[in-house]
Length: 427
Image 1 (cartoon, helix red, strand yellow):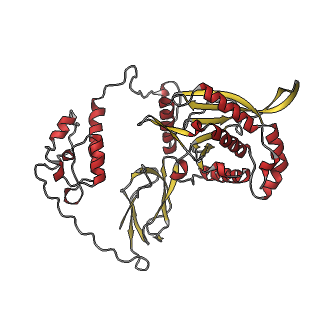
Image 2 (image 1 turned 135 degrees about the vertical axis):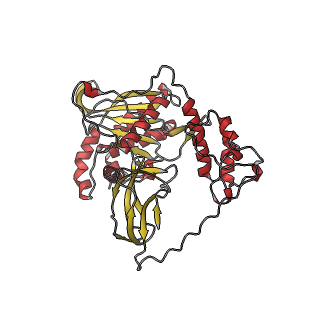
């Protein structure tokens, strides 16, 4: 049997093969991982749908594969796999009245949507076989189904056929689209003219990060609010309870304190826990607090989501943050664990960075950047004291949040950092 790549999830139609864990001639069991696929920022294991023997591997590491593509061929071993019935041939699709078969793809795309439409003369849509979901999408996009070639049994139009038609329309648009004003086309520069160079292809993850960062930066008007929080008290509590946490197998860092402080502040300023629905012009307020935790990995920045952070103790947060970060560095987080965040925290302090301007993780509307704490002289009750001050950088979406709201948020956030007590440290 041919093993095809399954769809990995909503919107996950393709990925890059990062490792192949079997070889031709191997016996495999149903559910055994055949290969690992990098999709967006996650690495997903692809299991075998049945037991058998690998007779042919049809992909190699580094290949980009799409859902439905054959990745390997599996033969029965006579012990664990029943004989597979032969596939019955699909009967030829009968011609539909008033509709020609799809012509061969021309070397150049049609010059207009009207020319593409002429390939499929319009008849009544009622005569076209298509499921309700396809009809609804076509109606919303203003596409007449008589223009779409159905490739399923009996000429039925599936969602894939509708997608193919839209892609042909996009080909027309891109073929005829003039360059943006003032934006010259990309040019490949021969840097070797000035000295020795080497080239390294961008990894799939790096390409995803580049695409996401470009979209986030160009579509969201960013403003960044800066401040400092006195974390001397936090560090005293950490030092006092470090051994007790480690005895339970948990490493106590600044991040769980930061998450606690952020959640307490978000509850007072729900706008920062929202998203903008650009299609409807509505602000979506969320009644849950799922915090993204930016993790620096060798492959690039990955932001897994810590669910229901408001319902967890400092000890639970410390444990889950450590586990999430470890799995992110090992590329073991799945695609769903990268979705659904309401606010993100990025901590560069451990590396040594101070102030920076973090980029918002769309569709969130704000992100907090933490820098390296530094001892500074601070005036407290008319006395100068040396305190450990933590740089804070709050970037926010100015379409949703104004400067006054951001200032009030960061004032309350600073207070939350400075209000931790012994009771918060219970295990």
